Length: 266
Image 1 (cartoon, rainbow, N blue to C red):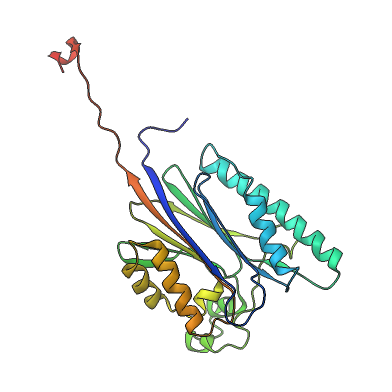
Image 2 (cartoon, one colour):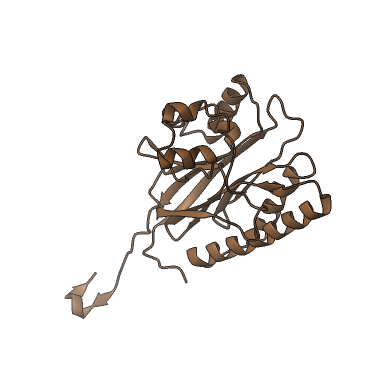
């Protein structure tokens, strides 16, 4: 049973995906399931009949999450479905017999006034709060690992030849390898979940400006971001899920009648 004192939220969602200017197949998949408190982007790899199968398998599994009874239950359901999708992708790769296939995943889970981001790979979740953008995920990439180790500088990372090599994905190991970040929701929090087909063309400061400008119209936000990525080359599929969290005021309590312990009438 939910605690009536917990903050309640309603959610506005917009989604958009585009094959881009170069690719023939869209290997990205996305999900918006506000009734479950779940939104995600999955970016497949492995080519037609492989990468698209991988990302679609994740989304199909997550569509069975249903209505959880709290944050812990939602996370358990999410991981259960992710394990199932991981097994399906591994089996499909074995059937194809032509190498590894897989998919990134970046997900936002919301329950009981709290959020969690769970991810594997380089698809990202951002949060705009009070006009300030923060990245809620940390890329599982070769270049990120080199940066963290101090082996290369940020300037070198921009031109690194293996910049897009990921170090984790769903469907490439026996069990999913994910990280998680948790926090407390605030009114008007705006989350952006996206594939690297978008972040390839945006630095965080520009992304922040665009999100602030279009925060009141999520469909316009998605359209603006995708259009800019396409104008700048659109080398990859581009997928976005935008989620705004609006806190619902607690109902006012009104009492009437005689209550002697409070000195009479209320």
